[in-house]
Amino acid sequence: MSSAFHIHIGGAGVMMGDMLWKLYDKEHNETTQKNYIYDQVDENYHPLALFADLDDRMIYEVQRNKQIKFKKHSFVYGKEDSSNVYSRGRYTVGKYLIDQGLDFIRKQVETMDRLDQFLITASISGGTGSGFSSQLIDSLRYDYGIKVKQNGFILFPSSQMSNNVLEIYNSIFSIYMTLEHFDSIIMFDNQSIYNVIDQQLDLDYVDYSHLNNVIAQIISSYTGLRRFNNINNSKLFQNICPYPDLHYIIPSYGKMSLINDYTRKKQNQTEFIKYLTQKEIKLYQCPKNPKHLSTTLLFRQKEENNFYGKFDLTLQNLEHFYQQNPLVFQCTSSNYQILPELAEMKQTGIFFSNDASISNRFNLLGKQWDQLYAKRAFGWVYIREGLEECEFQEGRDILKSLEKDYSGIIDASDSSNQNNFNDEL
Ligand SMILES: Nc1nc2c(ncn2[C@@H]2O[C@H](COP(=O)(O)OP(=O)(O)OP(=O)(O)O)[C@@H](O)[C@H]2O)c(=O)[nH]1
Ligand SMILES: [Mg+2]
Image (cartoon, rainbow, N blue to C red):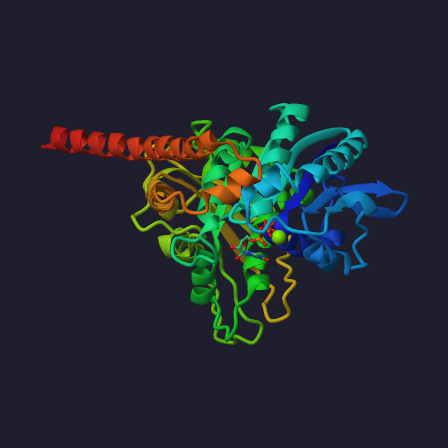
């Protein structure tokens, strides 16, 4: 029996985890493979999860929920956060909590038949989500090797909306972790999620709980393949990453609806696929048109639907330049909701895309970094907390090479299209 271990790091990561475990709890009765995410002791199911944060505020939020039987040592936390500084999260304040987290994980892993994967949620804009995660994920790779997959559900800084200039530094220092220690990164940014919620729901007020709900739904559908259908879900990310380093995946999610929206109309399958695959509902939005290396659709509804992937031309017409047909997965379960204002939909879907136009976002992030670094703005804050000067340039270089890899693929595909066009003349 295989299992996954969830790790939720930093304020945002912990609150995404909070929403996710509430959702898992609602889905508990329908879940057939409970041992995939729980440690069963007698009649009790304890989440296989670690919540780690340098301060305790968000951790207390999670602990308020007494219905979910988290183990006592599932929570690793201190008293002061990293003040938004990567190196404080990694080398100074965070350093004292790492062993505690690793110890708990090791004890949990000893109870499992087989550990398949770590599923990690964090925002790499914050000092804990970037610095502490980098240290922990690095140690996990060392301790468990590459057979245990490390799949991240990671919030990147938004392209325009920013709380703090240090977000840019933190996220670039974390790029090494995302590239070297993760097998897949499902990317989000808050501004894009806001846009998608705005497009789908007529809400007066949107807060983090709505954003976390979207992220939780995506993770739940992904693990749902295993929990409800006993499908090996690690294949989903393997297939979508044709080159090992190009493992940055953008999800789209739909459709959400308010509980009191009586105008809601059911879409037929073709309309639904068209809706899901439009660029406007990507949860990490790129300014340029998509250039898909590969894509995968994951549908979620109670009964299996034989239509998907067999007859629909919308799927075949998606432009790909690596593999022709997107894979289709189905998770058969209810679509529960945690937020009371949201309707439990008959059907939802996720469109995962490995989209080379992401190189534009990497380019923008790099330019923002260049502006800061040219003035050495705030650099001393990082150095004071143990960062080596050379790490500034290392992160930037990795980002540059990623940008180059993705844009190189776009150029290669454009020139092959041009050749095909010339051949046709
Ligand atoms: N989607 C979402 N974003 C959040 C949430 N909480 C904070 N954020 C965003 O995530 C970014 C990082 O914040 P945190 O995760 O709180 O930072 P941290 O990792 O705890 O790091 P420090 O507090 O600096 O030690 C900020 O840009 C916030 O806007 C949340 O619950 N959901
Ligand atoms: Mg924090």
